[in-house]
Image (cartoon, rainbow, N blue to C red; front, side, top):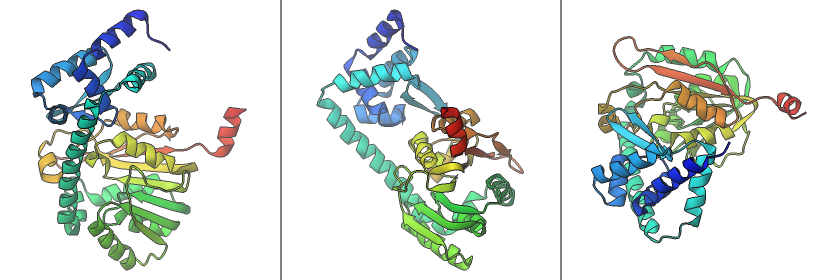
Length: 322
C-alpha cells in the first residue's frame, strides 16, 4: 500500500508547521490528551486543538474520546507512520529536547500521583476491585478462560495483592508476579504464603519492560491494569512477547464507560476499552484472538471484560512457513 501524490502533499502540508512537528514528536512517545500537550507545548488548549484538527483531518494522527477527555496518537496506518518517522528522523530541532523534558515532568507527576494512590489503598485493594461487579463471577470466568493447565509458568503483570497468583497457583509449576508498588508486593507475599504457595517469585518490575525472556510463560495475566496506563498498547505488546508458542494471555479490564470521577478518585487514565481495540493490539502482537467474555455488573456500574488470545504452536507456525 502507498500514498497517492495528493495524499502525500496533504500530509506534508498538515505536518509543515513547527508546533505540529513538535506534536508529532511527542505523540511518537505515547498517546497524550489535549491538556497534556498544552502543558508540554506551553500553548493554550484551543490553539493546540486547532493544530490537532488539521493533522487529524489529514490522517496523520488519530483522535479518540475517552469520557470527558480526548486523546491523540500517531496514525496506525503503516505507510503514514513511515512518512511520519521519516520526517522526524530528518528533524534536527533542539526545541524538541525541551519538550521531552517537560513531557518527562508530566509523566513524573502522573506516576507520583498513581504511586501515592496505590500505596494508600493497598490494604483495601481487593475490596476496591470488587466494587462494580461480583468478584466471584469474575474469578470463575478467569478460571474457565485460563483452562485447567497444568501450566509450566504463569506470569501476572501488575500483580497487586497477588490474587491472580493465589487463584491459579495450584495449576502452575512456577509463578511470577510483577508490580511497581513495594507495598503491594509485601501484601502479595503475605497472601501467597497464607495460600501455601512456595513456587512464587515476586519482583519489583515495570510492565513496559519486564526483563523476562520472550516466550517464557504459557499463561500471562494482565488483570485490571491497563486502564491506569499512559500507553496500554505498549503494555499489551510486552505481555504478548512473554507468551510461549501454544501459550495464552488473558487481559481483564473494564469495557468502555463514562464514569469520569474514577480519574480523580482512583487514578484511572482510560475509561475502559472497546473490544476491537484490545483485539487489534493482540493481533498486531502475533496472537490469535478469542471471543471476549463480558461480565456486566449486578446493578448500575462497570462491565468487566476478559480478552483471551493464544500464540500459535510451533507446529502451526512451521506449517504456515512451509
